[in-house]
Every structure is written in structure tokens, then in C-alpha cells.
Length: 96
Image (cartoon, rainbow, N blue to C red; front, top):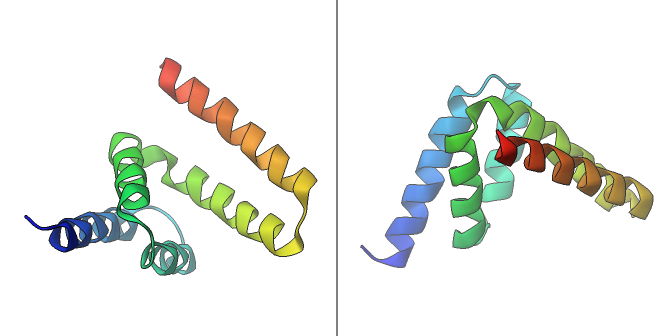
């Protein structure tokens, strides 16, 4: 399978997972828009995480929205706080 086909497969699997997620339609659209231009590595990483932890999609969505907001505002303190929360949550998940 060539790289383009593989990337499309990752994207299609993500579309399905996001489509089935218990998040708002607006949030589903946010993910799908963001993932259109993502690198294969990013697609694979997010796909793996969502497959392994489907119950964390809503959490990841809120974190993603907060990151977008902090980035738009160029708020380094908010960005660092978000990254710290993300690290803590991922450490908990990996320890389970």
C-alpha cells in the first residue's frame, strides 16, 4: 500500500471514530478540519490514542480547543498550564 493510501486510511478511520464520539458536531468539525493537513505521523498518533482510549476523545477535544485559544492569544502561561495538565493525564492513563 502506498503512503497516500495509508494516510487516507488513517484519516478515514479517524473520521469514523470522531463521527461516533460523544462530542458536539461543531467539535467533530473542528477535529476534521484540523486533521485534513496533518502529517501521517500526527494522524497515526491521534488514531492510536483514540482507538486505545475512546473515552478520552471529549477530554482531548477540550484540551485541543484550549490550545487553539492559547495559541491565538499567544498566552504562554495558559499554554504551559495546558501542557502540564496533558502530561499529568497521559501519565495517569499510561499507569492504568
